Image (tube, rainbow over all chains, first blue to last red):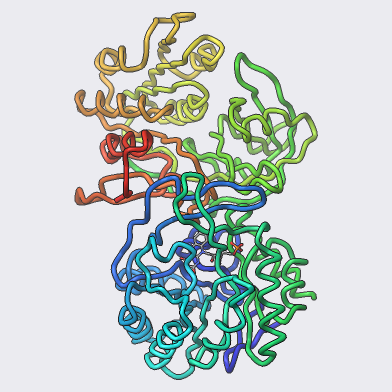
Length: 276
Length: 286
Ligand SMILES: Cc1cc2nc3c(=O)[nH]c(=O)nc-3n(C[C@H](O)[C@H](O)[C@H](O)COP(=O)(O)O)c2cc1C
């Protein structure tokens, strides 16, 4: 079963969600990454970030609350070490990007695609703790449109531009339309749900607890924009979860938190859907 | 020192089964059928256990013993303290219960190339990881001294078992219910000197590991500390278990306890920073 987004063919409809697959080698013992639809990296920033204070993840019923602080090696180190490892293994790689300014997003899109290798870029417009991380505030559609358009301009022809949105049913249709008009090939619905750590720090909630919210986003956006490719993300842990998202109009799905509980989840869902 | 590369292709994720569960003092000892794990095992490895459908964080347990073959096939033994939700969950599994586990995980203890004198220091249930290490070291001709510590006798792992592999075994308990009364820090310097230790291995609370690392440095020995941190994924994916360390060239950086550890060189961990985080005095982990 192959999956198509725009002109690009993927090995299947199951991708690894941003920040939940390590840098690749950690997940490799549990899944043949080249047989998945793709691997989305943790959000890469221009400069390295060490990550935030502990605790970074806390359990909540059927969920995990996370405030990791975007630990990542920065663009140059990612290009030098992490990307080649994935490419050598024929993995379809989408680099998630996050920045503190418009210019940083555009610069990241350019820098990461200067040399061939990536299948696409996933613009993270939806970090649940964006303000605490100092990221650009993209709640305002006008800002979001400018940012997506700026990234589109930097992308070589043929590379996919994914835009990851907040799983906010009240605003998600408008946000998806804005992203599509600004040049997104597909939107990812959605990120972790804005939440708080027990000590009050801003964080995001992922896992089965948020599945129905992400599903609602997919259903609403698909109803309003039936031609826009959608990638469901939020709470997907079983083949049946994935089927529900595909039935609601998603072209593909991403598996996040479930991998932290069982690292074979993405491979198992992919194998199961393969037989549809 | 050489870190053994796990030639048998990394960890596996399986549904194991409880073969036996018995109480030993203050802990539960579990034997689990675990196909595929023992042949990949190195001392210092651990397993991650799923403790129910709605609890998403994994719980880590040191592998106390791994048998590739035997009456029950491939098995691993774990020593379980009944603390926290995960400990209580696993401790209450009875014979025949399925248990989802991933392992063996983590960077194992590095072994000396030469047959040198080694001191192994274990406190509470964490000492479990040192028993298979003692066997490996003895196979290599090392002289093994074990120092077992616990708050009291019921939380002390078997000194009798330790004597099967170790040349000498010393015991300290905080309440003096068995062995010498006191803590690791009270005796470690003396133990290292008497054993003329060249390598020191330690497992237990961070405070004890820090004491052992400091004593090793003073004594001029290498130290390898098996660090226990709260884990989420336990497989290196989530970056939820940062440990402040010094990198190759002395630069401060963060390592992952589950994937870059749990075994770290004692002189590479920034123990004071770790203690400060745990007492809540940190603003940023950097
Ligand atoms: C530990 C962790 C790190 C994450 N890092 C990122 C990230 O860097 N960029 C991003 O866009 N989303 C990140 N996410 C969000 C996930 O990709 C996913 O969108 C979200 O958790 C909802 O899906 P899930 O319920 O399957 O986890 C992270 C989630 C977790 C749990």
